[in-house]
Image (cartoon, rainbow, N blue to C red; front, side, top):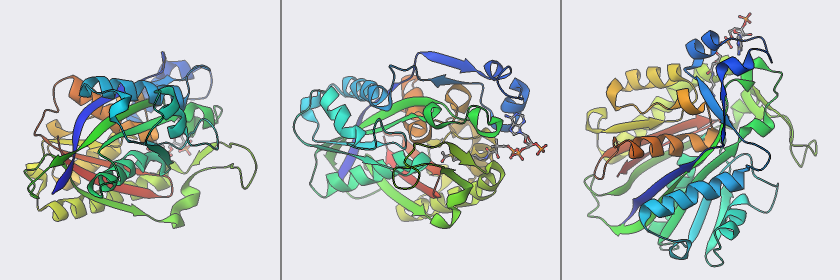
Length: 323
Ligand code: ACO
């Protein structure tokens, strides 16, 4: 059978790093509160010349380099983002143009923080369905542009950045020993819309709006939703937590990551944590964490890696990949 195999990965971050202490003169907060409640120590913030498209292009070029490929080898770009450069055209098409790619096709996916997990599952279907052979899957965000910088309960949590994978059609025997995407489970439920949303949009206010979140409410649902969808993915693949080499969760809050891993019985040393470095970068969070763990030699060819995310909507999902 056809499998969607990871051939390369990469990332791009804005030049400017903002430390927790930098918020202390802006809103009533402290480094101690932010670290204790979230595990975040710093985040990258985009300058005016850094956009979702430019960061996405940077991550795409890094992933292509690591794969030893060029844009000519790619036939589809799927970009996960909730902060596109423009309402339309899709920022994926802008990235396609920036890469000098005038063949194939490109589109955006919007599932907020779950966007990258949705995008990997979608790219896998395009590859297995024969519509594409090599796909650039990108998560890129500039959440700094939709933050209310006077709201301490949200502005300290988010950051900007981008990460990307190149997925390529390969042959598999159909079992869990195959390299590539092995199982996926996606969920959404709009009943939770008001707990995490942006209070603007083209069809309502005609403005971009600002992120609003009832953090405590999101927290209350997060661990249960994450663990349910992961258990469904384990069941699909016929594996247990012990079989995993690496757990790469959405990086929103260290306490959510720790509680989910504990509930699932995933050993602490298998959990990739980058929330301290990047904050919550929404759809970029999982591919940024992946690129760190690949670059430092933790994730290697043949490793069994579980990706997971949960975000606005709510949306949530998990993907199991043999690297
Ligand atoms: N600095 C200091 N105090 C603060 C800050 C801050 N930056 N923010 C809030 N507080 C205060 C609150 O006002 C509150 O004060 P009060 O007790 O006087 O009312 C107190 O700290 C506790 O607030 P809580 O909201 O109960 O704090 P909690 O421990 O729940 O932590 C947090 C807040 C970090 C937001 C947490 O709830 C969380 O991580 N939620 C989940 C977020 C998440 O996972 N999002 C994922 C999806 S993101 C996406 O899809 C875009």
